[in-house]
Length: 144
Image (cartoon, rainbow, N blue to C red; front, side, top):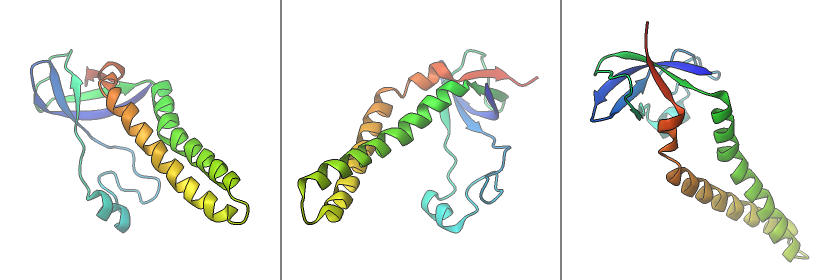
């Protein structure tokens, strides 16, 4: 079980807006909040992403809570996010390079790019449909 400390930002009817307090530093730069690497910091602009979870423990704004999630869910999600684009990129490369006799490398490049974009689109569709599943997977409990 993976656990992270979080703080309740706001409460709604049966959901709470949670902001995760990162305690473990980044492996690249050692930062715990935002990105310390210039390029990544510019791309992602140090924004904090809040999540919405079912509030079964009647937490109030300002309460510290512990979020727990099973490792298997994290593994499946990682496989989905990385595996589908990688496999579709490989298939695009193989399919388009088999169509050409003289420009195999160029066709493989364009096939890989097209396959990767298609894979990202598929991941976007899957995650859009399965977004509410996170409410069932993540468990919120009060800090002792």
